[in-house]
Image 1 (cartoon, helix red, strand yellow):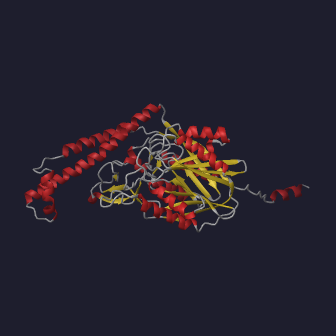
Image 2 (spheres, one colour):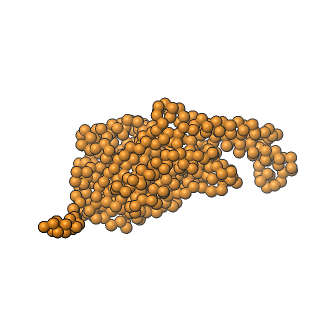
Image 3 (cartoon, rainbow, N blue to C red):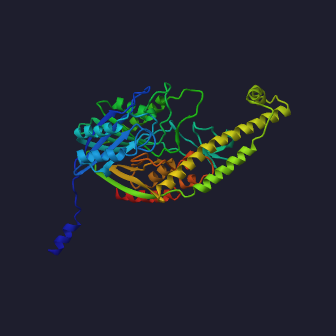
Length: 471
């Protein structure tokens, strides 16, 4: 009898996974009191397998709280309403901001709750598949590595460093993470696509816009048809700009970049095979990360540099008018030694003033976050990290602007082949640069617009590794 029991225990047990169900819906959340170029949306994907229900909500907004129109209590209020009405666990609700700089309507919270109600009513059995696409034409790293060993960045807020000082740039992530959900008859129901790029290109009309990712989603939905939804999950794009972000020779237009991203996603989607079995798992953990405690030192260093730069400015015999008049001859090498020396002195002053503009913007950010951390009253900041598995698709989230190296690190070390990373999720704590970047002595905004101490990166990556093992 004992031998029979042992033999039975050695037989592998197989349990058929519950049929995965999914429902989708969307709602227009555009502020139409301002000129509008294209609509902003809140979209919801509700997933159910057995007793587990998860909700993925995407909003065309700059962030979930802290900056922009969405208030700090938005996440808590939406979750509470969904728990009360639909019995959905708050920890199973994921809300991601595309980080476009569009302006959402005043009642975005109510419309977001309604879109989940609608998605719950639309639940149907689905087949699921995961994959990846490739797109290398729409994004560039905005961090510039300089000859002196420091790094700066490319923004409209200030001048870019001179070409002759630049020796390199940071990496980009060309991967498009994909989840495909089809109805049992093969009809597309929903697509999640994950990519790392700041959708801040703008449009020629200057109207309210969902930007690059709004155009990409429309391209995907138009191609799939039959009311299928494309939900964009923003990746680790803290230091990733749209390509040619500061091109002054052409109008800023997000549509071509968005269409390229959408079509590249579609190319990969067509290769994904879906199947009926698809497990659903959700892990939600709170991680205490160390707040920066070195603001005094960093502020003093920048103030000293500010003084040094200001005192290095020297008078010349030129003003802007005479400089521009002489500049064509200067470029052609046709000036005498005295005029050439004056031109070079004027150019040095211009470069110094440009550096001062970069320094002053980032100095103000350091002072802002110094005050914010002091007001917090504790040395750590709690962040919510979610891990979600939908079939072979694995997603890891963070409530801030992860720089791209961190996203690449997570993917490289992940045990599951289709693992992707979403920043800007379930809150907003500003930038989260690498420890090396956080200690950069230059004037990159990612390093100054940051609440965290450099040690945050290892704590986060260790926690991610543990979550991924459980998924």
